[in-house]
Image (tube, rainbow, N blue to C red):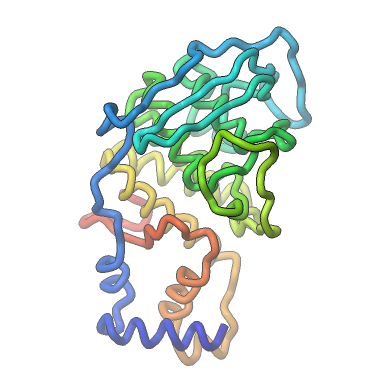
Length: 287
């Protein structure tokens, strides 16, 4: 860790010892949004829609809604032309929003959510752990696919981005599958190494407060998706940093900023490479 912290300090020195400057220069947060909102011609369609489910309700512990197995396969093509598949008998409750955020986001079971939720559930939903698509793509890609599916289903942009923020901050995460590619072929997911989600250690009330900040930020700024992901990265890193006091000697030599930047570089969950950015005129809570 000391070597990495020293490396971070050197990198910051190149950037004029200002982590904000370096992060802003290296960020892709200002990239244009490529999604089914901006490029519907990229694919952006469900097949075998509308979704049919079997009248075989399943109740799972600590889940607020009943689950139903899908009757037919449901395929989705996102804005990048990638294909996603929910096989028959995928369990879905029509909602992918974490329970702790329902009071903030609202009822997530409207008809325009059902297709996106079913495909999302195939890749990471409870009850589908033995399914052929479970964890077969990166968790970041699966949550972005959920956003695309919401847009195609008719969910308004602001609502879709709030729901996306909810699954990003409170939804499941997992180790990258072997090859980390989207595939509709093969039986069983590549489970990969064990994975620790650092947000699991964050108290529920703190995650709920972060979700409220994200909701306000989205409603007030209507950020494009890359900027929203950058903002969510900042929120999650702040949450985790509050739970992980740095060793005293490293703070003594490099200060809080150097240690924090080192943490960003060393975070295995930063595959999207959207580091912290701050919109001009916004406070740390997006207000």
